[in-house]
Amino acid sequence: MVKFFDREVSLVKLQVITWLFVMALTFASYLQNADFGYALVFTIINMFSMLAVIYGNACFLLPKLYFKGRIFTYLLATVLLLGIICFIRVELRSYFHELYFRGEDQSTSFQVYASIMTSLIINYLFSFIFRLALDYFNVRKDQKRLKEYTSKVELDLLKAQVQPHFLFNTLNNIYYVAQRESPQSAQLIEKLANIMRYFVDEASKALVKLPIDIQFLKDYIDLERMRMLHPMQVDFEINVVPNAVELPPMLIIPLVENVFKHGIDKRSKENYLSLKIESSDGKLKINVSNKVFEEKNEQQGGNGLKNLIARLDILYGKNYKFERTLTNNIFNANLELPL
Image (cartoon, rainbow, N blue to C red; front, top):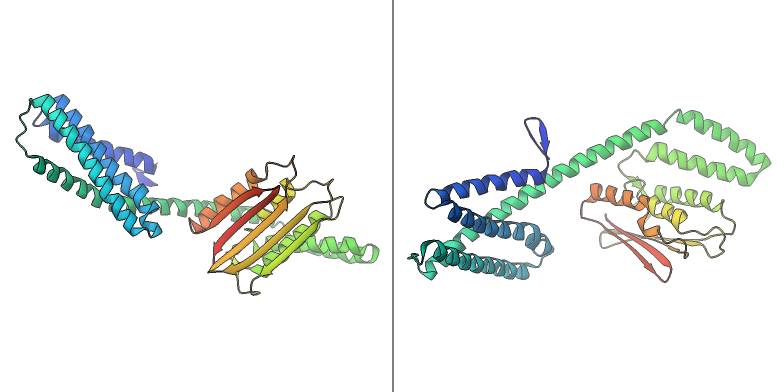
């Protein structure tokens, strides 16, 4: 986003304004030596070739090939792009020049190709500047989104921190009473207190240690299992060095919460949840899987997962991987984060 006269202008609008300005200058330069129709036609041809080269390289060839290390394919595709556009532009130029001037063109074919290819190469070089500008505006946009998200989180935390010490002290008193009357209820109260303490003490941090997050997940799962008619199988497989990994808080819980919202049949005895966490190749790999019942077919599109993706985009940009698959009634959510 940029500002003109204290008004925000989107990147799309800025591009439209810029290209309209370039088009007007091009049209004016042609209009000095030709009639209106000729100037209009050749302005459109020039703008088409310019936009095809600039956007073709900046928005397709660079991100799809060059940034992924496919250098030879990128160079080949670049030559092909410039060659095709040059050929089309030469043919269009010849056709319309003959149409307007009845064969008065004294330029040789080589001169025409050399002139047009030179202008296309200049457009190609400009496309790198254009790509840098796009990246700059995208970074600015991400920074703004992150700032807005951070402000929202801080506001939500302030709302959630209404007399936390009073709440914890009250829960502690209930816990001690419940220990005498119902030890099982006391355990549930303790887990609830742990979850609330996580929200107050850990959720506001930029990073938390993985064991703290795992304990939070276990407490949440135990409270959810309490509401189920039949016992639920839960498998934890953690292959990470304790306290060696830190990650932003509340990243794994949406995957687990999604299971209880969309992947559980409280009447079934076959409910299960599997959570696997490992680190390899500089990545933290998280897998959450569960059985999906026939009537529970909306798990892939839960709002919790959509919100998670939005947050991952803000935190990691494109430097993460999140995949969801449904195979043989088994739903898998795989998340990879850089360490």
